[in-house]
Amino acid sequence: MANFSLNINGKTQQVDVDPATPVLWVLRDHLNLVGTKYGCGIAQCGACTIHLDGVAMRSCIIPVSAVRDQAITTIEGLSEQGDHPVQQAWLEHDVPQCGYCQAGQIMSAAALLSDNSKPSDEDIDIAMHGNICRCGTYTRIKAAIKTAAKVG
Image 1 (cartoon, helix red, strand yellow):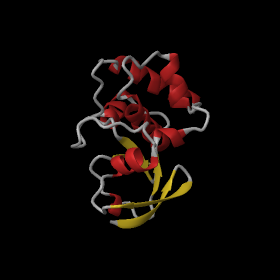
Image 2: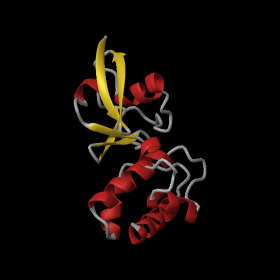
Image 3: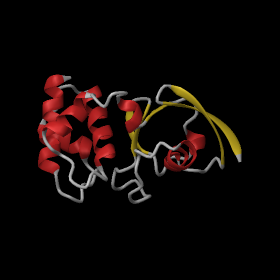
Image 4: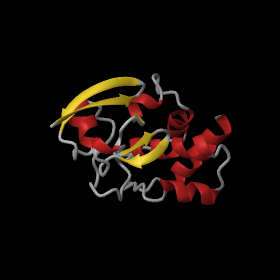
């Protein structure tokens, strides 16, 4: 076990865990930040997407020891009131069905719009590639991203 000081959603959090523990499990099991979901465990589904220094990353394969001083943002930290433009667009377009993948989808979309405020369809497809929605709401996801781009 080792002690890690992590910057999560703008707050310093201390955890004492095995250095190989994936960030996903540190968030969920040690800090009770359960918005980030476990899907596949091999970075292929996107359910566990977080931001590391603003970049969308799959938390299921990142060992906590690799985070160092990078800022972690989870879905809980994206917006205190849940009013981030992507979150609002998600509701406007009625994107979620089962909702399981939505935190990861939203985090990927928010990272895209942070880097590219006017993404093309191809930009959206590339940024969202690997975020799997078992309910198949891809058309609504793309529409929501386009709406959020106009607002943001």
